[in-house]
Structures are given as C-alpha cells and as structure tokens.
Length: 586
Ligand code: FES
Image (tube, rainbow, N blue to C red):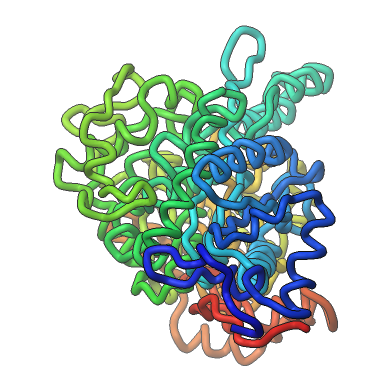
C-alpha cells in the first residue's frame, strides 16, 4: 500500500482489492483519493472496500457506430450496483471508421495504449469494455490483455437492417454496389443520395458481417463477452439487459479473480479462428486476433488461420459473402447456434472458460436455431469447408498474404495475368475512368504502399473499384493485390495484407507493369514470375519512400509498427505490463 491502512470489508475471497490502495488509505493520500471523488455526490459507503469497476466507453458523436454507448454504460452501472460494486465510467479514444483520416487503423494501437494506461493508473478492480465500430473492439481487448484485470466486453450491437426500395441493404456492402451502379450508369446521383439515408437507419455498427460484426463475434467466441452479445441489435432491449448482466458478471469475475489471460488462451483463439470461418468473417480479424494474442504471449501465427479454418464450413449466410444481415442472424439464433453446431462436430474447444464462469461448451450446448436459411448446418453448409480466409505465400509475399475466398470469384482463384502497377489508390483512380487504360479482365491490378508504414496505417483501400471500361463491359471482378486491408463489408478477388509491405522494401515494391503474376489459391501461392537476379537488380535501384511525419503519433507509429503478419502492433506494445502501480501520486 502507498500509505495508510485498509478499511474493513476491503478483502474479497481472501485478497486485498487493488482499489483499496487508493480508497482504503488513511491520512492525506486517502483524503485526496476519496475527497475529490465525493465532489460527484457519492456517499462514503462506496469506499467501503467494494470492487471498483471501470467502464471504458468509446462513445463519441464522431464515431456514429458508438454513439449510444453512453446509454449502454448506464445499464452496465445498474448491474454493477446490483452486485455490490462501484461503477465509474471513463472515456477511451473513440475510433469512427467512416470519418477518421487517413484510416482508423492508424489509431487502433493508440486506443489500446491509452486504455491500457487508464486502466492501470486508476483505482480499478475490474473493467467493462464498451466498443462497437471496427477498431474499438480489438483496441480495448488489446488493452485489457496487457493490463489483465478482470474484464467483460459489451459491444454496441449492429444497426437494424437497411431498407431501400423494398429490399434489405447492408451498410458498407451496399456502398460498393451503389458506386459500381453509379459508374456504370445504372443508378443516378439522386438515387444514390436517397439510398445513403436508407442504409444506416438506427444506432449500431455496420450490420453486414463486416469487421465490427466480426470482431463482436470474435469477442464472444473468445469468451470475453456474454452469449448473444454480438448479435442483439443496438436498439434491442435485450442489448441493454445483457449490458446490465455484464455489470453483474464483472463483479463476480473480480471476486473469482478470473482474468483475460485465463480466458483468452490458445484454445480460445483457436475457437475464434474457427468461428470466424463459420460466420464468413472479415479478413481484418486475422490482424486483430494476432495483435491481441501478442499482448498475452499466446503463440499464434498467420498460418494457424489457414490450418484451422480449412476444415470449417461457412455456416452463416450473411452479406458480404451471402444474403442476410445481422438482424436476421440474431433472430435465427445468433452466435451460440453457430458455436453449438461447431461443438457438435468437434470444431470447438468446448472446455474453454468464458466470462460467465462456465465453459463455452456449457454456454451453447442447448442453443436453438430458428432459421436454417440464415444459419446452416455443418451437414448442409452455406459454403463447404476450405472456402474461408486462405493464407498465401510466395516470392511476392514471403511474410504471407491473405485472401477471403468466400468473397472472391471462384473462376479467379487460379489466375495468371500481367500486372498493372500503381503506387497508391490515388494514382489508380486518376486513370481508372480512362477508356484507353491498358487493362482487361485478365489484368492483375497491383496497388502498393498501402501497408502499416506505407499509407500510413494500412487502410481499407485494397478493393479498388474496377476500371470503368471493364464495368461498362459487364466485368464484375478482377484480381487485385495490395499490402493494405479490405473492409469486412467488401467483396472481390483481392489479395490483402501482402507482407513485407512495399514501404518496408517487400518484393511488392519491385513489381513492374506487365510482369506476370500467378495466383493459385488452392496451392496457397502468390508468385511474381521474375527471376531472383532481376529482382536483385531492381532492389538495388529501389529507394524507400520519405517519412510521413517527423513528430507526433504518426512518427511514433511508423517508426515502430510491425508488419501485418504479426498483427501490426507497435513493437514496444507487444506483451503485457500487468496492473501493479507501486508508487503513490501524493
Ligand atoms: Fe462503424 Fe462500419 S463504420 S462499423
């Protein structure tokens, strides 16, 4: 203890609570710790040694997907009070996918670092993590992993289905189609303007199986949020009921000292990887799960995703790979129905422990499915095993690359074509409408310098729209290769996360227009048909791009960010510091 002694009632299950170091102190320090908190009108009983629960809220009007989290926090508080805890809400950096430039991914590690330090530096015994938009879920999980205080996640839930001209439209996914229809003249600008108001029509995150829905599902599959948490729509009363339950649960986790390191084990990550395959989840889960595992010291490699997912059929028929949306998934039975199906076919570590205190197998053992159109069976899957995210290697991606097979065109999964190379999406879009662009449906579009260091921040720009002349001819897909990422709401035959990235001197930087490239997804290879001698000669001429910044976060980020194959964390943030803070502030 920093100073003074603990008050009575400060022990829980025979352990001194961490918060007692602050609120149980006597003398000047104790007065300072308690007195200023009392300015909020709390009665002195809140300092009687009950668990103090932080509620990390990524609420912001600049992050529309998270804008309701302030209300979700109120439900969490009810649960914490009910169970004898003392809830304290605090803001953590809100990352809105749609507004942040150059990309929200540039700031995922900053959120993780900020939240980690806030959790550690404050008198907290446990935390509830409120997230929603894409990067907020992994950012908070990375932080919680590094601090390792008992933690429960509550994601904000998906929006209600979008509705346009009598049909369901998925946020994100519909944007790509509307843009293509606009370019091809099948839709007017006025129709587009009307349609944009029909997609995002309630609180919540994107309601396709994009990255937000995927990461919410990953949090549930890892055991870090309560069953059904990933799928209740943001405006559904049961989301708020679940949030209240999470407030109750976290107090129990503090009592039992059940921490993220005991929940997010190798078995839990294997469960998450298989669930990601079963739901047709985003390729971004690869990067985020690697980064979270890195914080915990759990050995996880890029190849694990390929090996583990190969035997898992896609069970969920959701956009962008399928037809339905998260609201439908919820009413069909949600993630527990999927996990039950996996467990019954030996594709889940059923004994992995979760925040409920029970095993994941026990949590989902009697989960019903109400709609087999949306959640298929392993016997009659939506897509057969082996059609999930594949990991590619070859002389063009010695560190690896990924491709989402279920979002690709089957006829392009084995393809040989000549490269058409651009050093940025901007360069490409400057000519993409040119009727004389030297491109056909066999061309392989290479878009580079979009990796963690390159852009910077590894944005979701890899699925560049097709050249206008091909769209007008009815071509709907072509092979694209990039060191950036792709939105989980997007689709197309796009090789992503090429590592090492061009800006780090990877072979992608050496490709030239009209080089032959062979993509062979069944063989898991990506080959640049250029000799080693020629590549060495080109490398000798290559010069790295100028730094993006000489100060600030962008400078720190680009100096320290790791490559996609290990999760794009910062090198000095990998691992954990735990939660002890031995020194007092007074
Ligand atoms: Fe926030 Fe899609 S923009 S989840």
